Length: 226
Image: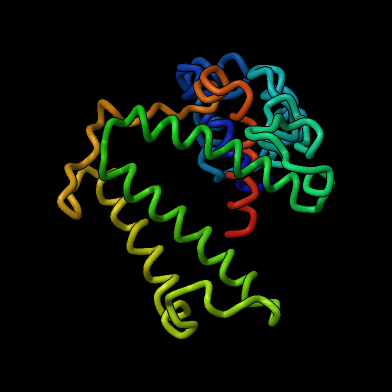
């Protein structure tokens, strides 16, 4: 059994507020065995996977981490809504179209959360980190074509190479400190009362058009990092 299964069944149970004892009884196993499944200590049979899928009203593919959609849909460029208008047919049909939708739609959710956090530091560090990531990608693509004029950027190539990654990590570190309840850069930490509730079902209710994109992006990122 893959490692996603134990993580996801635990998340589903807690998300729905079901005790481990009740879930075990409803699924026809002992609490100790369910605990082992949730911790990844024991592997279950396919019949139990199907029972869990029926119990939580999700697909087996979702339980196994093959899709971020609970009903089992595989995200494609055609079934994800546009967060922003697509500029041209060429952009719409290009290979990166799916990634564009995932990123743009996810940004809608992120910036709404930043606004609701009412924390200037969190917004500043998050925006700076994202801006640096976009800058680094754009500048790298710009440098790939020798016909692009060298005068667009004030930073030298050597400075860019040496500073881009550390700079973005510094902004991310500032964001992480504020979200961990510690002051940074003259900013007050994020209040726990203002921290967003990000359970999958909550995301789907609050952002029905964009939640699938965000969850899909998270899955893709973890697949690359794993």
